[in-house]
Each structure stands twice: as structure tokens, then as C-alpha cells.
Length: 325
Image 1 (cartoon, helix red, strand yellow):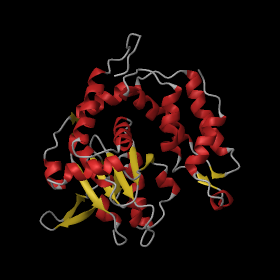
Image 2: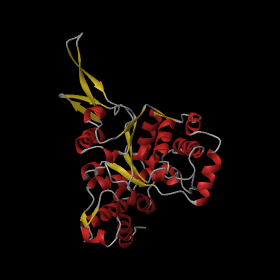
Image 3: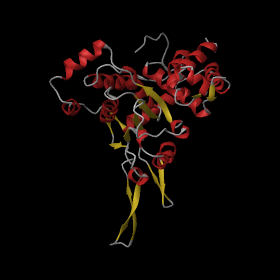
Image 4: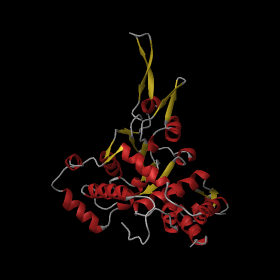
């Protein structure tokens, strides 16, 4: 916990201890990838879905499974394929001959932590089936609404390199993800550590030793504490200026929506709480903005041809706007 020279207005001790315990447990299985783990925890504290993008073999799925295993809640995994139907995800009504009527059979999306592997492999109709459940935490089938349990978080992975048999996610669906985490290769030292640590154990053996650390009730408590984190009005205006700049930037074909502003606000509060502070700083906002914005903006074709990336543009926008102090 950071050294604070003020009296804490919100007791974040239990939250901070739980986060540290989760990170320590993850570190026993995963070498490196601290940023991905941190952002996954922030997503959990913000009630936000997370999209994880990276080449095969960089522990995207393993990390998501590990975080889910640490939470004392139900977990389900879906492997998206081009022939996957909406009913394979949400469930369907099945005729019960004994009772003479139809009964709803829930699909695998009815869980607390839902891991969707290779989300960009399913066609548009199946992607559309996720719209309602991701935003409203409910599924409507045959006129009946079925609510999700608490908590409900979607962790989705995709491969940015392989294009055969994939579908581009629609902007409306991308906007429903709190973060898009870009996962890079490990450093040389981290790769040596991976080889050293995993030579005597299988992945299944490593996962079997993972302990449950946090319950659904604790998540509910921590989320309420995150909502109480203090943010000054000048920082709220700072967030609004960042997002507004994406709508007026000549290099962008599509800017970010108000949902992005709320996502930066919520994730900055969670980032402050994880670091042991009950107030948001400009650094929290600057740290969270790229992960919130990179999948919500679209560069103009000219800028894409010039090789400009979304992250480079976001960095330029953050440098242009005066940071409040």
C-alpha cells in the first residue's frame, strides 16, 4: 500500500489485502503479465467485461481461467467457432412431453465468470446474442426474460494475427467491453523463468493448486467501496476533454461514446482503490485511458495507411490536453 499522509475516508484494507493475495496466487502459475492481471481485477471491481487480444501462447486463456478459479463463483468456457448458433450460447426452450409445454434450458452464458475463447470466430448472429446479456445482464427468449446471477463478467480472447475464419466484431459490441487488453510476448528473463518453473508440472497440476480467495459477497462490498472513491470535478472535466477530443480529431473516423467516459471514470476509481488511495489522481486517468479507448476509436483510412496506431493517437491526445493539478 502506498504511504499516505492523510486519514483514509474509506477503509480499503480488506480490498487491498484481497488484491495482493490474488496477485500472489496468480504469480505462482503465471510469470509476468502483471498488467493483464491488474486490468482483469479492475474489470472485476468495475463490473466490466474485458477483451484480451494477443498472439497464441501468451497465457491469455490461462490467465482468465486462473482469475476465475480464484473467485468463489461459477465459471464456464465457450469456444467460439464459425458454426456456433445463438442458442448454443444463451440457451433454448425445450419441449417437455411429460408436462406438455416448453421449458427454458439455460446455455453456458448463464454463469458468473464466462470465458469466451476466440470471440471473433463466431458469425454476426451469434455475436448479436451477446449484446443484451453483456449490457443488461439478462437474456430474453420467447418473450421471457432470464436474469444473470451475481457477479456476471465476460472475459473474451481474440487473436489479432490469424484472419482466416474470423469475423470483425461490430463497433456496438466492442463498446460493451470496458477494456481491450493487448498482451505482448514475455521478456527474455520472463521466458527463462517460465521454462524453469513449468518444466516439472503440467498446466492442470498448476491450476489444481490454486485457492479460492474472494467471494461474491466480497466483490459486492469492494464494488460499493470503489464507487465511493473521491474524484474532483476538475478530473471529471479532464476525462470529458479526453473523450471529446477523440470526436474532433481529424485523424479519427469514429470517436468514443459517453460509455467510454464512464468507463475511464469507473476504472480510474478502481485503479486508485487497488493502489490504496480513496481518491483519483490524473495518473489514474492517464493510465486507464488507452485500455478504455483503443477499441472504441476508428482511424481514418489515410492514417491507417500511414501506419498510425490507435495507441499512438491516444498518447498524442493525452499529451495535448493540460493535466489538472
